[in-house]
Amino acid sequence: MDKKRIIVKSSKKPRSLFGVFLAIIGILFSLVYIINPTAGIFEILPDNIPFFGNIDEAGVTYFLFMCLRYLGLDLIPFKKK
Image (cartoon, rainbow, N blue to C red; front, side, top):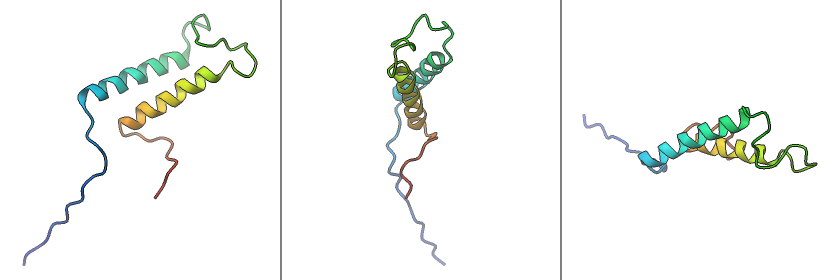
């Protein structure tokens, strides 16, 4: 009996070691920025500006999700097939 093997090619590109390193650095930066250990002294946009104060936290959170997605942990899958 000759069994045929089905080889499925992955559509994901291989990740480089430098890309993984940058993603981990991005995750660490994002977590430190979101935790806010400086108690609001260092911020890109101050939180007391109406309507714009939390845009920097939203952007950093999005950056965190994209770094995690690069590493293969997709927490927010928008497109399901």
